[in-house]
Image 1 (cartoon, helix red, strand yellow):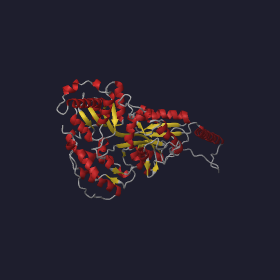
Image 2 (cartoon, one colour; image 1 turned 180 degrees about the vertical axis):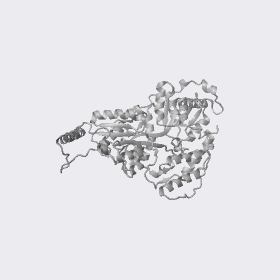
Image 3 (cartoon, helix red, strand yellow; image 1 turned 60 degrees about the vertical axis):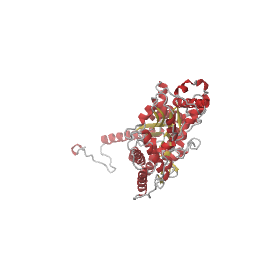
Image 4 (cartoon, one colour; image 1 turned 90 degrees about the vertical axis):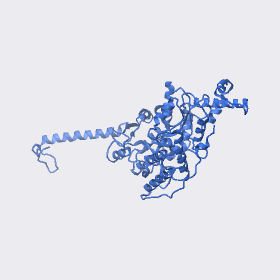
Amino acid sequence: MSKKHYKKYNKNKYGFVKGRAINIKITLFLLLISGCFWAVWFFFFNSPQGTSEGVVSGNGVIRLWYTDEELKNYIDSAALEYLEREGVHVEPVLVSGVEFVEQIGKASAGTDNAPDIYITGSDVLGKASMAGLTSVISDPYKIMDHEKFTEASFNAVTYKGQMIAYPFYYETAFLIYNRDYLEEIAVNDIKRGMLEANSGEEGEDSENDLAELSDENISKEAVRSRTEELIPDSIVDILSLAAVSDAPGEMENFFAWDVSDVFYNYFFAGAYMDAGGPCGDDPTCIDVYNEESIRCMCIYQSLNEFFSVDSKESDYERVLNDFLEGKTLFAVVTTDAVLRLEEAKEAGTFVYEYGVAPLPGIDDDHSAAGLSTTECVVVNGYSDNKEAANRFAEYLAYYEADTLYDRTGKMPCAAKGDPSDIILGTGTEGADHKSVNATIREMYAVSEELPKVPEFADFWLRLELAYTLVWDGEDPNEILKSLSECLRSEATGGEVTETKIETPEITDLADMLPSD
């Protein structure tokens, strides 16, 4: 208000304005303000929801932030069910995933709309913890035990010896195969065996001879047994199968994966690499440069001779689409592929049976370990409503877990009851082997999580570049040495030079394959 419109009133010794009419107006105004204050106070503390919209730490409202739009229906439904069950209002807020932790930090520092809980990847828990945006879980429903969650889930939410989140759902890589094609190869194998048995050493089989043999003479059990035997344990098994088998149907590729993305090629050497230790929170635990990791990367590089895939043109969508179109026998995919396959089968666009299997090692002497990420439900360290937040976080991650796949296509970390509660396609009628879900869960259990150590925030990108350079012909020894030096330098804050390891001798893959 400008000075020329300011009217100066005379006041008594108590500060009130002199004059009866003026005093009455001021008194009425003050009474009105006072009445509004008490009305707001009464509503605030007696409302069934506990707070008005926009207040973070009220007694009855829990604000949840998440970034994945695919979770919207699941979260909205869980929030409504929780309101009916507990009488607690949950306010889900879909926000941008760009600088998510920074957004939470800014909101928590000085606004009224910060989240009480939020959903994020386990790899940023270290960063969030350092900012005070996490809290040790209280586990009010006592559901955090090893019967319900794998060791991988526990490791994913553990930082500096404490569990600071609830494991929600995971992403990991595994092998998928066209069951129909593999059965066709199995049938031909059985027929060849029958021809050899009938003709003796002097006889020669031919495609005509194979075609003349009736499938009726081959039992379903024999086909099933041989098909299971053909599921590869190693890359050498895949190459050997390709060397002696004809491509059935519309098949063009025996094996495919995205060579440009570390999520799909990490398993080739992943079992012999470590950054951050079991929980990914130890900056002193760095082991990516050793004899076995070098050996595996050398063999990985030699695969370029067999597959000739350009890393600049490789693409996961193309790999998955080729499988859906019946062009590929074996492919490395992630959990999203299962929903795509099930939807395509329902729509009639994928006309084959499929199966899943553990990732293959390089050869019989080397195991595989895939990469995984775990999305977690975190209770904000700045929330004044932590206990209520813990209760809904557990409800979201565990009590609604059996509906997560159906609503989102995402694999829950929690095994609520029997794993067969989430039955997907098994690939074989009446098969007594594990469901797709159980097999994928086993792969997650032995996978390697991305590290939480803030200094290793770019580990994924560095590792992806290392694999690409090796695939394109760079010296695996030098690439891994450089990667290790970068990680150790970041962890210590000083320049580190690794002692050179001699490149081990490797057996040429071509020498491991059948000669015919």
